[in-house]
Image 1 (cartoon, rainbow, N blue to C red):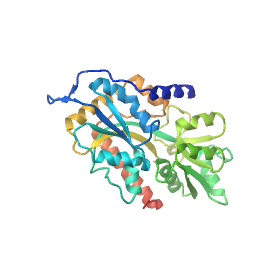
Image 2: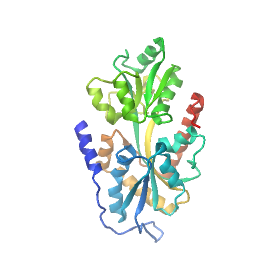
Image 3: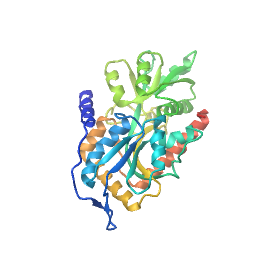
Image 4: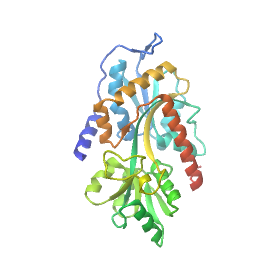
Length: 329
């Protein structure tokens, strides 16, 4: 599996030129698009948001007959890209590939942001979801979630858990675990998922939620132990691994999702056209296989479905943050 993932990332790193085709029709007699489309990404190249987008961009360029120009605007946990998209002209030529972190967590985490997840965007299409793995250092005497909870409760001092940073999805997944088990743990934030994972491996912290793709090599070596996945259903990449929910915590779910939005007020015909094309691509075996290698599941659906997911997750994580007292001035 690791060799396949390495090959796949090499493919993503190559820039592909768009095939010239006739512009598509919105169904109202107007051609769309008639010029390049700007795709904002609020993270650095090579990250999950970028890789998720690049699975689709070449196909979309070929379909629409116009290049899709990726504009990377990393910074502030993805919120820089979100802020730019919120202020863009809503003519259908600026898209944003966003993620759960900047879109539904950051608005409750930060006291002040220059955008609102409901007022400032048009939901276009949800693309994929990915679960986390609940990982422990081998020194933790637990092979299941109930055993982990029992082990943590016996400790003289609270165990430490690592995250990719304060206010990130992995942080909130851990806080949700704390709330549902009523077990005390100490948060140790890092500047990214990789260093957070390395300190679980090194034993500086005892547990944490992490991405499947960066965790997998260390599981086979025995440097980490995976107890469960954070989704509502098991992942095809680890079908024998139970979910946290089926391990005694029903209702537990913490997912990373990626989706396409635009500024508020985009033409509905454009939104429907782009949504239909993305849904078509998400049904292709080639695309589904690429996402599977990333531990992701494609999520075709209507724009309204994506908007409803945004609202559910916003409400859920706002409640968790309020209960845990998580807030950044």
